[in-house]
Image 1: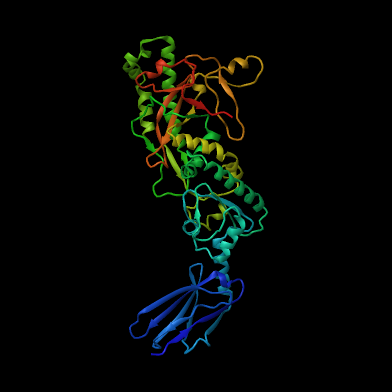
Image 2: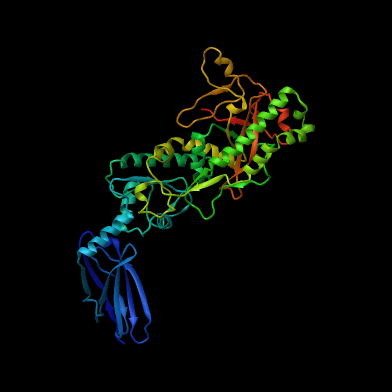
Length: 470
């Protein structure tokens, strides 16, 4: 039986590029209807590889693909030697030109737009691109990614991305915002390399929870960090997990209504108990806590009900308006304005990294509100006048990213109590959990249920809680 050969030389017209096209070669046995398929890319001359044909009773068809869609089907024939091959030119009709341009538009961002992506888990760039983009990336797309991300070496589909890395996205290499993005991404990569030198730093835990900690540090009234687990935490006994099911991309955020209702009820309980303690009533005696419980049954019920409810949500929507039609709905691509943009990530990643390292070592993260409602008057600290006395206060206002305010409590009165949510690391070591709530008095965390807080109210020593300051 003689051996025949088949090969195709393809020519294209703008805006098509040969390097962006792929092909499938179907060899169909006309007698048995069995189909054998070969796949490949065109070389710089538009040539496919040679395929040996052993049966001339076959149909030979090339299907040319652009971003996973068939652009053209081409019937060819086999030849007795490799001196001859089939040729074909894809001519750009008005309809085809419109189809190709629309296809190009659907994969890219709008002209001049730049966005960024925070890598959440270790995966290949091929897997990442399939999750992020609606259509397969072609050679031109990879060229743009390489040009705009010089901090990522050897960008190819099999390249492994690491959690915490930043990927800059744009449809061109000349957008005016690109130089700043590229520099920030490079500096963030250098920071990440240094952070990984800390044996207690977990890059995946950091990346998965970055938005939550960043948002908490810039928006919550009070944020605390304990290097040791907080004891006497009140709650339902069921930790509220924050790990999203089947979710890689997204920002973990509080359900504000639930969080505020929980802390509001618990703050009022703390305040009521502090007042009873100050008056030295029977209700403040731990032995008679059941009477305090009866007197505050509505608040206790509200607290228990609130902390049992869903307290977290996942924001998985695309954060850039122009990208909604271009990327998958689950791709968490960020605009220049989301949470301060890439500059804010670069500026604050070390501080957030410190928080995540402490939690991974067994510490707790605390978020508090309603300080003023508990009878605490906050002052800005200065080095003049009566404020020198204020600096001796037991409670210190925490770090506010982008600038901190050092505050204090006017005196160490028994009414100086605050409530916080206590957060730890969840099962599996990636997600977070709300362990419960506790009272903070004199810089010490303790539970009010059972009256344990009565023993520590008014003590000024900071035993375990580090209120974050610069």
